[in-house]
Image (cartoon, rainbow, N blue to C red):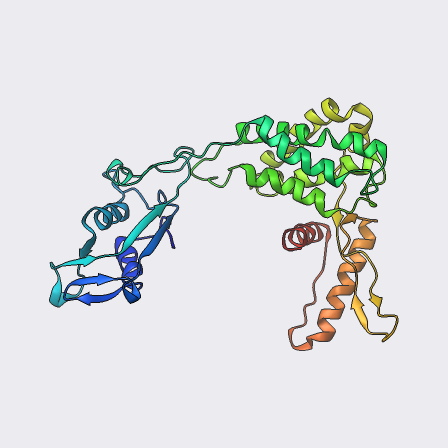
Length: 328
């Protein structure tokens, strides 16, 4: 697998390929054992475009595919052609535009091209709607009001996702402003993390939904004005899907985390078994801070040589909870 980037040079590309092959006869090389090898070229459009509009790295890639090899770099063999057998190629790249390059047509002509488009709204609703229906069902212990409201989560999330990706477009400076199906699935993944018995009413469900949308869409943004835009989008669609009352009750984002429970002990041995990780609303900001300082104290006691005397002010706590959610 080759992960290309703006820093990938033709020399680096050739050295990577050469590291995976061995001599067969003379100036002919092949994968180890004479086997076939598939080279997956990821982010094929990332190599830098020079002043003349060329992607030099991709021209070497084109030569490798077209001529089944490239030229020796060794001083004593420089100018001699190195033939490479037994390679086949798969490439992947993002849609050109919004700061993303295209690849040369000469390289593009060497591949059978598939354009993967986003699924339709109906397909998305069918996929995630089924997941939510299974999550908040009578069999799982969900209350009737929560079950009814859960049917609206999919349409509300799709509306937010669609407007965010249409209004916050990628640029050369903010090339990571890309919102695809992966981001949409992360919203529902976060909702799935919260046990049904924690979602006791409609207000908690909407709070959970708003929190997950904020974490997925707003946290990847680098400008405060863009984060504020996501908040405005949420405020726009909440009354439309959940009503004015639930929208007013969740005007502010309710934080969720999974490190608030107390440590439990084994009833037979008395040994510490750790605290259960239950993804639930934060009891209070003071409680969350207390738990964080408690874990910090335990770490300092366990690793005195690596002790950390940290001050967890409010903004640091917010970042800590975001990181905790990401790696949970």
